Length: 412
Ligand code: C6P
Image (cartoon, rainbow, N blue to C red; front, side, top):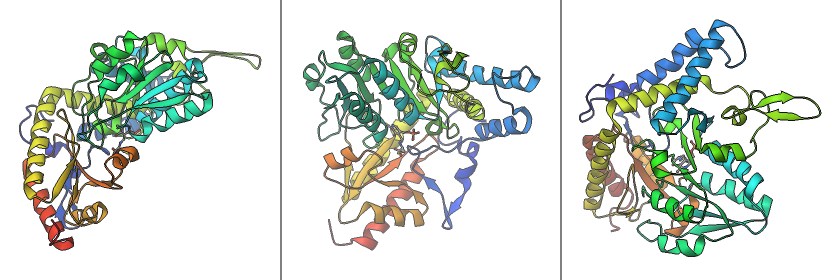
């Protein structure tokens, strides 16, 4: 495993990075969709299924006790990783989407009433729009949106008007998956808390790139996905402050989330089990634990510094091409570089890039209002991780020149 992190010496930890696609070495620039997995994470899941597989919290036998201990260790490790006050403030979910849906449902059940307001922002992923729209529809409440400027920065001067006595919760993304904007979440939380409004932060695109400290940020809920931070798919985290999680009702009913069941009445389990109905993703938690160890071994600050450098280099090289327009030019950015090309449809660019070995994502990136805001239906997005290199960016830039020459040599 990687001990000292310098340029790209961790690449051999990721088996898939040595693949060829269409006869070309793979250049994987789609880590915002999902990161690749290091050996240690793959091995951890394999070991569970080969040696340790058992259901947890349910039986007295050796394997069940061992698996339960590993699972609960994983919870403690996540709590440490984001500096939660208590392990029981960590709820395991399938991912960011499920974490947000859980709060949008349970919080709304308890606190949202007719004509109340929920505040989100103009740069949200669908996962932080649709569950709130559904909650507002159910409760006859209204969705309000913090606008952004053309650089892709939130216009916080609108907050005094948007946050009022009708506002029941604010739900904002920490980092935009399309624009890369790092939002000043701490400032937004401070402003909301002055009015006793809780704040949920969608951390799906932040946790892979920077140290997150939920106590320092003082958010009320924080959501993220394992698969975007080198862990397996199907495991995610909802952090919630103890007092909120105690106040809101369960999301799903079933095994494990109960204390006592009779046909007349059911009482619910304590935290965190109240929100973990059914058999959980035990190997996912073990893989997440391994991924956190792996990231911390490299160092979150090293990761942030290396990736910042890589993004800035990519932006500079792309702009130098002369036929590229960047989408998202906020002062504070991380992880992604999105753009369009003169005279070339993003889908065509993505298809040719794929044949040249470069994996990027094209489309609206599950954030259609962002694409609409820029008057676009599709955007090309290159997203980076610490296993990417400047050499890969150079190869990507050469590939873009080929795309341009093939599809639109005369349009500039
Ligand atoms: N964005 C992307 O390519 P899930 O699917 O639950 O792990 O994550 C949803 C999600 C929520 N918020 C943000 C900011 C996100 O970026 C994502 C996932 C991927 O941008 C897949 S659409």
